Image (tube, rainbow, N blue to C red):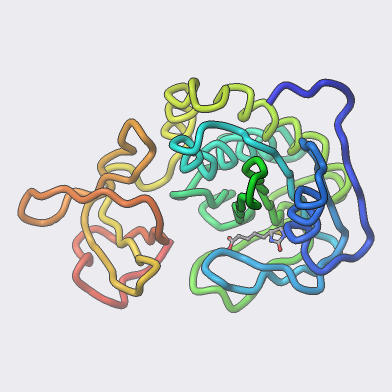
Length: 261
Ligand SMILES: O=C(O)CCCC[C@@H]1SC[C@@H]2NC(=O)N[C@@H]21
């Protein structure tokens, strides 16, 4: 995604959802890349239909890109976005980059606790090019206290700056990752970076599937097209392209109450 000129960025005080605005801009013919940010969202959304609490003090940012790659490669985008945001967060003043990791497919953890969520949405209006929106919610001053897993915010992790200060380094990280990906041709390089910063490799884990089923096994690797490979008890392997990952304490993989990450 080589930018032809300066970064295009619409910054709002309050919106429903920056993803919605970015998609609407695409439907109205915006050529992208276009960043939409807001200081607060009244209808922020997360993965799998969940709400994303969006108080002032955190950063809400969405990037619209048009036709970013051939259709067969679009499934890479969550991993590309995760690498870009991980690298951006690791550069922020006061943050120890070694503590910034990726949890499959695209949560960013700092010190083992979720700090960034990413929601990719895409659509192809009839006769038009593919619109893809990379939506990023970055916890800075606020994080939920009722999540079923560990959650934190950049302020608690040492960040010295504001939500608006964080935007340029994070946007740089995402744009560099898109450049590295090179419309799918550079996926191997992205995959290597993703693996270098992943949590849970080689460990027992549980995948909660979008349909409600669960699968337990050992997180073996990402396959060459970016799917998670789970080694199941008994020696079979299963690949997953969507779901939520929970790390299981060793030896508890059959326990439904095993502690999530
Ligand atoms: O469930 C997740 O982990 C993904 C959360 C993504 C939230 C961001 S905030 C900016 C953008 N606008 C939205 O409505 N959602 C995404």
